[in-house]
Image (cartoon, rainbow, N blue to C red; front, side):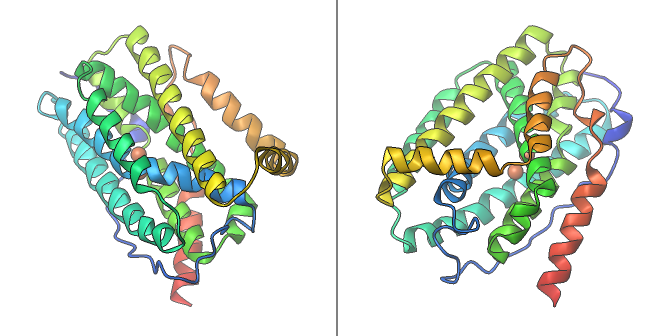
Length: 276
Ligand SMILES: [Fe+2]
Ligand SMILES: [Fe+2]
């Protein structure tokens, strides 16, 4: 299995251990008081640890056959970053439990879903991982660019910015491993479509579950969603739409968007705040 590592993929991918202070100061609706925005993030958060362990398994299943030592090293660093993400997000689960949210049945079902996906051919699992990583990089770019995220509760802002920064740092790894493995365009697109359905389906189900536990009715939820849409930065919304379309181009590569300096600038901001 050989292919040149993309020239934009040669930067270091450090594994950081932020050990964030998850405590009772975090409000239930940490996203500037908006329950829908808070629970959209919370629902994604519920899928991260097992989702990321699925990504690690999918990439690891191909690592032994990668000839380029630089890409092998990138794949190890990718696994290191994703493993820490999973652990840190699981620490946050205890905050949700302490706030009274019943999340464990959802987590059990999602874990079972991951085990079922493990039965898919390894090429499809890797293509799903590369597709899901395009979502995390695109949503990460959104979170790093959106000024509203910068006024969330400081611990949650740190969690989101740190994770988003590392998603941007390693956004090309699964894709480069997929290219090196010779996975075809139809399988790449199949993986993206499966990842889209899984991500959007579980995130929507998790968000509705948490809003129901808050006693928020469907009408209230719709009104809050409309408010969020009205307040969203149209340029960022168009960026996300454009990136999702871009994945269908045959010559697509994640590094065609250069957002590493944005990621590092935001990370430096939260590190300065934490040190103050
Ligand atoms: Fe991650
Ligand atoms: Fe990732």
